Amino acid sequence: MSGEEKIFFQEAFDSNWIAPLGPQVDAFEREVADYVGINHTLALSSGTAALHLALEVLGVSSGDIVFCSDLTFVASANVIRYQNAKPIFIDCNMESWTMCPKALQKAMDQGQKPKAVIVTDLYGQSADYDAIYEICNAFQIPIISDAAEAFGADYKGKKCGGIGDLNILSFNGNKIITTSGGGMMLSQNKEWIQKARKLATQARENAVHYEHKMVGYNYRLSNLLAAVGRGQLKVLDDRVEKRRIIFQTYKNAFSNIDGIDFMPEADYGLSNRWLTVCTIDPGKLGLDRNKIIHAMEKENIECRPLWKPMHLQPLFSGEKLYTQAETPNSDKLFQNGLCLPSGTNLSEEEQEKIINIIFAQLA
Ligand SMILES: *Cc1c(COP(=O)(O)O)cnc(C)c1O
Image (cartoon, rainbow, N blue to C red; front, side, top):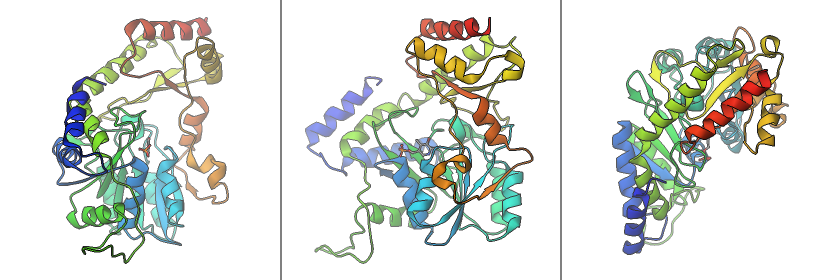
């Protein structure tokens, strides 16, 4: 926390708006809209809720196909199952580790067209939206941008979370800024956001009594948590700067080591470097990624592999629906990929200790 949150939190308390609506929610929606540069926003209880409503708004239902980034967190894909729709996972490229436009084109040419494409801005790096739009526009297929990890990042000067036809952000505790739990849907399309707003409040009709014509959800963000979000928003740019410094410090430390490669930054944008991620080449280092994880564990430091690709998840094993880029990139990254401690509260001393532990393994 930055300290600013307390001021808004106190305001929320004093106003007695202890509910999933109120002035803090309205202000948070406006402020995020201004930051991202988009007209319409809807504060929700999680990023997953926002993804779910995005599919609802687009009318994705039983039997539909939805394309989805293969290398992502499971929430991106779970919502496809909520709708009883069928995911097809699209491989990443090695330049950005985000959805490979060539693999997307291949999937598009293969058969049944998807109802939507869910694109993840992985570890804070934007996907290549111009290339992806070109492919989707040819068939008028809407793009849902899963920018849960990329708040504060940009693509060609435009903020992530504002580039897709529908966009989602997450304010979960592990993200670059947090409301403890929360999310947002963002779009230039007013009707979509209106429809989502209704669905998020039990789909209550506009009547004095409780009138319902369709199934709804209880997905709104608490006024108290929106207050926390407003304080966090004030330090978002500082957090991006800090995370980028953490990344650069790791990168510099291992710049002479052949076999440790850091996630590249695509030239079209600025990553928020939510997590510092790298690959460990066992052939070159005589050391695999898991050995580093175990060495860290001994020092009570948490390191993890990258997200396990969706097409390798037992949850989706029956589907066998995966469109590979030239080489199976997501598999390769998963085998050797490592997330290093990257929290903005990481001190210089702590980071030095982590770097030294890795060097000790290399010796
Ligand atoms: C965190 C995350 C989500 C889900 O957000 P929640 O707010 O935790 O529901 C979705 N997609 C990606 C890529 C994420 O990292």
